Image (cartoon, rainbow, N blue to C red; front, side, top):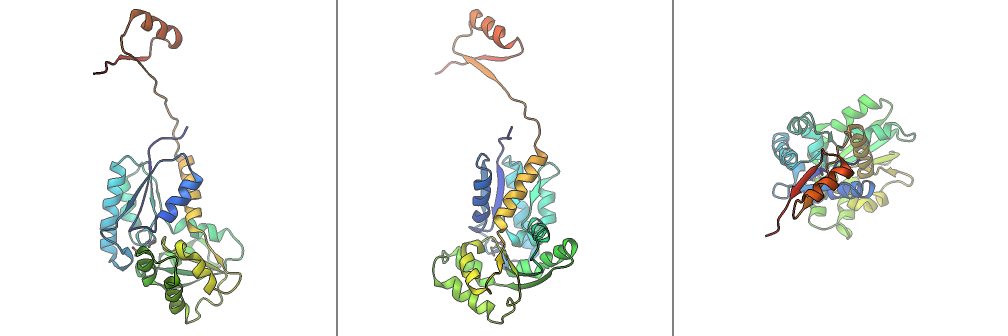
Length: 264
Ligand code: DGL
């Protein structure tokens, strides 16, 4: 039985909606509570301390709102604030970040030997993708580059026109991604310009679908954490007659929740 409490998802703005949509597609019966920290974006240009402060506060808000799991749908927060987020979530609310599930998924696949990564300044500067890759998959190499203009352009609504292509062309001009076999879009805004990225990469480079991987990880975590659900039944009547009490006990036993409700 699926527990009815919502999944908390957060990002600095619209980027996390790419993850929320993948979760909605995979787990259509789950309630979602999305928080976009639009007052403080872009996270990618903030210090780790500020990212930690914003992320902890949002996590606290989502936990107080009854969320049963937190998805950090922001690579900048996942890379710089995961410890603070896990602490704010407390021991009973699992946290899913953007980095570990993606690197684990890549490690399990053949043909991911030379991996490209683009993300915000904060994500790339943290070095967390490289560290996690070294821990999980020592055979792959990571070529990373910060592409700071991209998330702001996307947040401003420029994702169905020529601007992202021009921005990416400038960032890819030094040919550093010429020999990669796969590419991680290390910012949740970037799936919105996935085709622009693909078009600038050598043929055959696989662009990793991070939102889908995160949704699958959430499903796994929810299944692992699912607790037996105790159904609660209520029987309400407008006039609590002896006859109704007798009949209700006859059908359901005496240990039932029976109440009289009057409408005003
Ligand atoms: N979408 C966020 C990420 O994944 C960051 C965008 C920003 O606020 O800089 O890193």
